[in-house]
Image 1 (cartoon, rainbow, N blue to C red):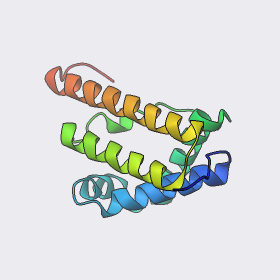
Image 2 (tube, rainbow, N blue to C red; image 1 turned 180 degrees about the vertical axis):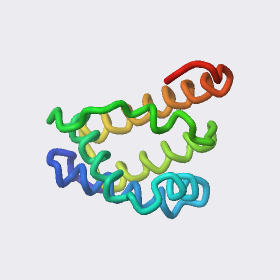
Image 3 (cartoon, rainbow, N blue to C red; image 1 turned 60 degrees about the vertical axis):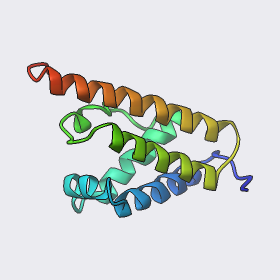
Length: 129
């Protein structure tokens, strides 16, 4: 078991890069992410570095709205469950400690919120994000 903690921007990069390598290779999630992101992975990864740096390290480098780019994705509970499972697996393999626990908790909250918002929009298509 690892004893590394999430303490620096390099730790965030390792987490994000490892996680999204798994996403890209995943049978269920890879096609969705790769179709949307295409060859813009460096831009997406940079946003994710900044997002998690802001959330976990409280270094405020991200400003944006994370939900709107996800609003029209063709995803359901199985996609969110797989996303979260891969995220938790990645964190558990790489890190330990309070920030690792917080990362998994925040990812779970985010997955649940995004899933509910996407389901709501599918059932109420005239609402604007």
